[in-house]
Length: 87
Image (tube, rainbow, N blue to C red; front, side, top):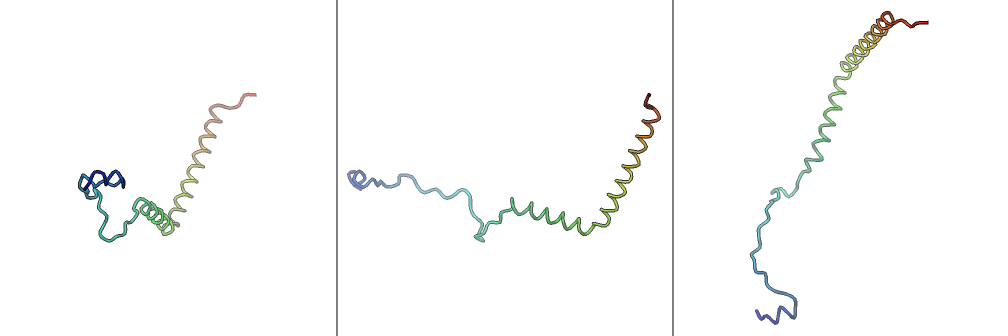
């Protein structure tokens, strides 16, 4: 090729070979966005799990709340007997 040709047109042939891409796409032609899909699947699984075991979860939370209330009442009564209010 003539050097004056590249000066006139601004085109010069490539001096290095074309490198193959370092990351290859899957052969199916469709990439699944796993970073978005996995959290959605996880949330759906948790909701389904809670729906299936809603009765057991409700009973457990009611029993837990009952025990918390009983323990708080006992602590309040013990504190009141140990440290009575002075008049």
